[in-house]
Amino acid sequence: MTMHPILAALRKHKAGVVLISLQIALTLAIVCNAVFIIGQRVERVNRPTGLDENDLFLVTQQWVGAPSGDDPAGVEKLDVMQREDLAALRNLPDVASVAPSNSVPLLNSSWTGSLSLKPADTLGKGNPRTAYYFTDEQAMTTLGLHLVAGRAFNAGDVQHQGARDQRDRPVVIVTQALADKLFPQGNAVGKVIYSDGSAAPSTIIGVVARLQIPSTGSFGNDFAWYSTLVPTRLDASFARYVVRAKPGRRDAAMHAVPAALYAVNPMRVLDDDESVKSFADIRASAYRADVGMAILMGVVCLILLCVTAAGIVGLTSFWVGQRHRQIGVRRALGARKIDILHYFQIENLLIAGGGVVLGVLLAVGLNTWLMTHYEMTRIPLLYVVTGVLAMLAIGQAAVFVPARRASNVPPVEATRAA
Image (cartoon, rainbow, N blue to C red; front, side, top):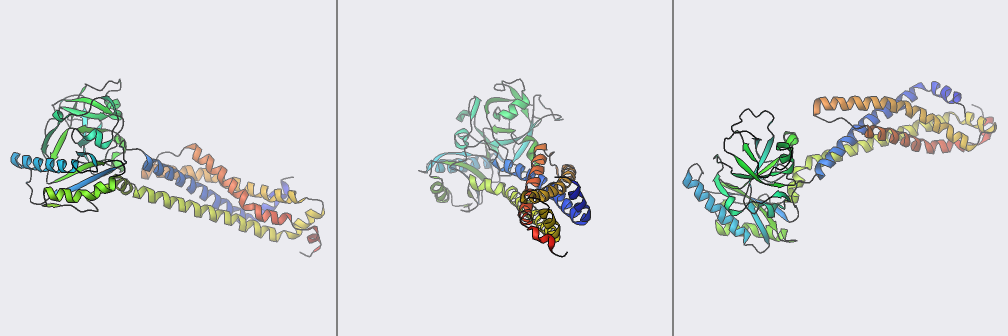
């Protein structure tokens, strides 16, 4: 089949060719970047926190009329109240373990600082940021963390302090990512670090495989896995308790929590829906915006692809209607049905080919703009290549029905008046 008849026909329909090519180009540019964004969101939503999330839930409560914690006597009283709560929760029949904690991954409530290898390093240049988890000796079991080096906290390591107090942190546990950042040569256990410009040393006694920081926003992107566990109960007018239920008993344990805490001290604020939340709900809440963005982008992609395919079908059908007599002449001169089918498929391939070339340029340009204004990363070449092949395949699929109809035009059409 020669290309001359196809090119001549396209020159006669410049407006339609240009419109379809532009539509294909815009669709390719938008869909490539949208799919890339969807992929990033899906990867973000599915990334592991480092916790054993099954049967895990969080209790957040606040005492009414409790001491402020601004003086030693108030701190001691708050600590007694917190230990009473912990004992009551640990005695519940459906509870396996409980640990106090200022936060959990994905909660978006964090205490952050920085670590250094030098005492009183207040400049902080190059010092990694970290998120602190203040907890006790049951943290490893309750959170389901995987210890890869060293040891876990024991009861003798645990101290307590007012939430606004500053106290030395003799021992800490860090994540593997943070240990590698601080000590690239390895063997972080037993090494000394300094937190937040302090001159007091903290000895690393253990390393856990992974523990995500509480923040899920862009603020925490650079140190998402740089977490530090400190064996300290924070004493304040409110407290958080991480609870691990016995296998399959999470809902029963959650239901029993309010009554157990009110029995210890009724002077507290405890809402069944918000104060006692499963980690599954915390995860869903943290990533609700990402899931919504992925769904929205997916719908936009589907609409654009459908509109583009419909445009190709409509334009080709219009051209087939205009060329009935010419198609009949070709059939009368010996053209087979497959030749007519191939004619329209090649014609569409040329139009789509021009559209995808322009679309690649637009896709790269759009990605560059997004990188500049929205901190997006560079789109991998695989996404663009896949998009090009997908658009060409969609074009061929869209043109098949009208092209098949054109191939069925009988030779007798050549005898009819134009």
